[in-house]
Image (cartoon, rainbow, N blue to C red):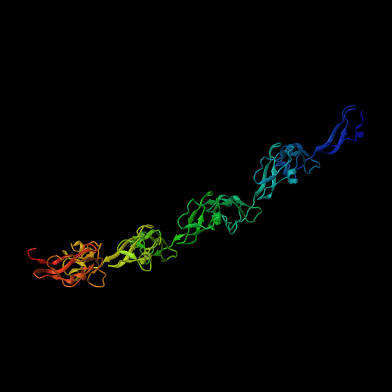
Length: 551
């Protein structure tokens, strides 16, 4: 303070950024000191120049020293930093000391990119280096740092740009899980999930969007996203399939679950298979094939027109079967082929059963072992055994049951044929041959049809109609006679003219008894054998065979 001499001003030194020895002179008494001796320091940008500063490596202040003023324009804040760079040259010919740049502060984007996880404090922008140091931002699962997580803040107060996290690389498993198929594009090398996903798909029977997860670098992918379809059985199963366990196929079910409750029907062979092409759809059936058989000799009661049954054929192809009505069978024929290349088994045709009427039609009678009475609904074979042909009829009874539950139709019994001209009627009968040809055989009914017939001789009575007293049993070629019975009368008193009693015939007698007791009287003319007629029992005989001329 105040005026001093130059020699006494020893406290003056070179300012910061200058170097030298200060020389103080006072050219004019009472004037101002002249200062000299200080020169600007010169420094260089010494490598390495690291953040937060950047300097061009080819700048002038890198290859040779310069003052701070000369080199100021060459220094800048690095990317991610802001401020005004200041240069200090602490030692002449040394290296610049830089200051003035501060790290930008930013906020994390929301949402974070898929490869990153974490959060920085929500109270405002922060420095990326602080977030990383605190490990507040990391790589998301299935990603890894390559080489490290980076946060760049290009503009102070803006949003961080994140870098350094890449998807893990994994290997496809040697054997894919059930439900997945791959084109093989990633086989034999590790790759990212996105690179391998294009060749991955769900197999038939599965649906969804396949996904790959690579939890650890160079591990094996975990596959997800493909789900087995669920289906239901159709309202009616296809031919050849049936359900053995309905509980396994209730509602929507997996293929394996429902398949365990199904089987191929009898007559079908193969391994049953189900597919479920669309989730919540209907199962498709396959694998059961109809057996093929041949048609052997038809069982009793069946007829076939041979359509579709020639050679090996399936039950569906074997058509034209029907029940044989001529053998009294009815029903709905069915054919089965239980063994492949075997023989068809037929069913469905059963013999009809009918009832025998309480009164058998002529000429049928109950067989001696059958008795006579209702037997209920029985088969034709049993009914045939219960009846026989009546006396005078030959053959074997044949009974047909055309309609189940009805009455039998009868046939098979025919009247015997005898020879009329060899027949000599016994006493009490008159036989007229009519127009029947001699030497021909005829039944009693045929004899009546040709104008012949049978009647009782005079003195015999009976209630037989013509021919009903004839029977032809087959034991002889002649008819047997029955039905005429002799009646008793008495001789008239006196005898008619022309007759003479040769022997007493008193009281009521048969005509055969009294006829030998009579003869024609002298002068009477015999016209034949004396016949005694008796029209009613215990009446008076009428005589014929003797006539008197003139009477």
